[in-house]
Length: 511
Image 1 (cartoon, one colour):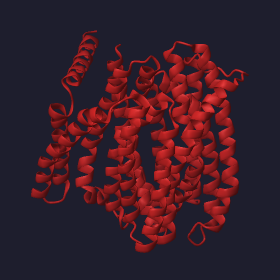
Image 2 (cartoon, rainbow, N blue to C red; image 1 turned 180 degrees about the vertical axis):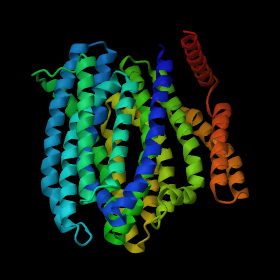
Image 3 (cartoon, one colour; image 1 turned 180 degrees about the horizontal axis):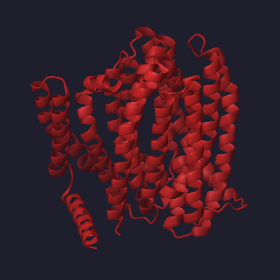
């Protein structure tokens, strides 16, 4: 199978996985909100946010581990891959312990002294916090196994594991309605159980199918320092982003109260579903970008960065456009009782996520190049600077939407900076990037918006409006992207892939 066909096949698997995730996730959020109530749901989100602030250490390792294993596999060096896996697992174990230590000291202090907890919910908050800490530790140990699956481009297996996780969480939500004890504590406990199950599946698969997943009692200062250098800069970049996004959650808690945290929690659920869609599609392409750099195929790397950015954006824009247009109707249908500010939160966040589809391939290129200092250092300064701007904005206005607008502004400025940083890292010229990436995307956006917006304003809000607007939006984006948004070569690759899939289906049906 050619590399381009493999990318399209893996993208299809992640697309299916994301469709299931979105449908189940949207339903479960409504049930959890109704079962837990606004305040408990807000409490669950804000406490999870505190732990997420510490788990940035483990998040910094995800792409780093995958990058090193992918490079070793690109060079056909299984022994080197085994050494890297062993070192990576050891480092992940250390990071997991650090998360527990930080969580049980700094995080626990914040929980007891600063967090606004509804009256009578202190014990539930304690249990929730401890379960979440344990879950963060186990999630850290899963990372090298998932990174190995991705490095092998076994995206179908990765997607199946994720679907099992989604269905387990769906089952938890169904059970939750019938639990007579404290539902918040029980929900946190069952979520921990799914994390343990997830780890078990990934561990068993990798041990059986991936030859490099065999822990060696091995130590190399060179590998350790190389990985540590990547981790160090990744922590700098990830921590600044996590500190900012979770800082938004804490600011809303302090200046606007737990009810607004519930509104943000709902918006973040939508963001998570849509963002995972983009990230998962990018996951199918990342190994090819890294391998292209490892074997010095720079033209192919440029092609993959630009083409994957456009592909992710168009696929995401097609499903985001009807959500953006019909936000109010969908939230009422989904939740019944929609917390204040939720509609505005969702719309602003959707724009941010669409912008991030351009950034993901840049981040992968940054990892492949190994030139991390300027990328992460510059963007961290930007994030910390906007953290202060956001703080003074919400403090002076007490308008919840202001924090999201500040974040969107920071994202736009960061994206512009990354275009020029790519020139330094891998030699992709800003002029070339703008002509091949930004111009066709902007043209596709403008043209594809005309018909859906016209249809929406001609109809009244309801099921009919939503269905017609959704169909028109998807068709409008798909047709415009095909005719205007991609190159002739990309159209040829897509058509060949479809023809090959149809040929395989026909041959199997004859059997």
